[in-house]
Amino acid sequence: MKTESIKRCLFLCAGLCIMAFGVAFSIRADLGTSPISSVPYVVSLISPITVGTATIVMHMIFILLQILLLRRQFAILQLLQLPAALLFGLLTDLAVYLLRGVTYSSYWTQWLLCAAGIFLVALGVSIEVAAQAVPLAGEGLILAICKLLPVKFGNMKVCFDVTLVVTAVLIGLLSTGTLLGVREGTVAAALFVGLLTKQIGKPVGRLANRLFAG
Picture 1 (cartoon, rainbow, N blue to C red):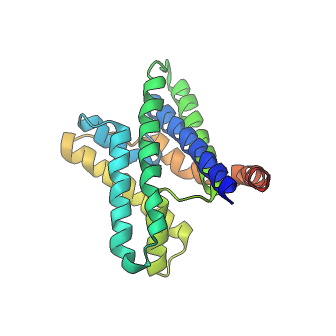
Picture 2: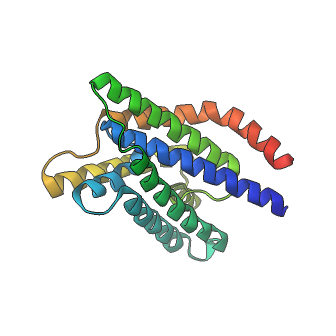
Picture 3: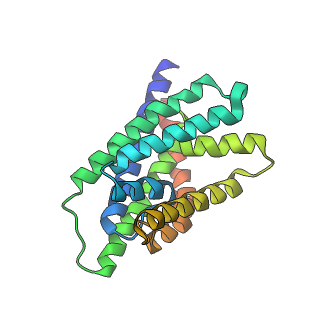
């Protein structure tokens, strides 16, 4: 059982690493990031805080909200979301640094970078879900809300993503008077990450079952 737990944690780490590079590719594309990264990215544009650090802070807020909402129903095991958030934030900053030399020369090459980002985020999410170790704080908050309200996870996920994008837009407008970090790539990510995750999730799930059964 201990070996299986280690395998699941390593699988989760691989997923977080891939997701981090997906976020970094989206940033290099300059067409807007996925909804879950929109707020940290905008914060990084208007402050000296890195996108990874802003991601960690946002996830810590999500964990605190889970505790406030669930209270006694909050499982102590869910505090493992914190080290997952720390790792994801650090990996995101590392990925952004490693891809600092990646540039685009035209609008269509921006879309190539954006597409790479969307695919990598979807793949990373699929691996994270298949690991069945601990959810990221955003997903954990959605699950917490669904425990208290008669709302399906999918519907709540849409509301959650819309809220994040609106928040990112407001932060940009209130701080600079212009739209920052939210563009057509954000819409594309909102539409296609979920669809790709469903397709990729099936083979990734089978791979995970073989790895964890061995």
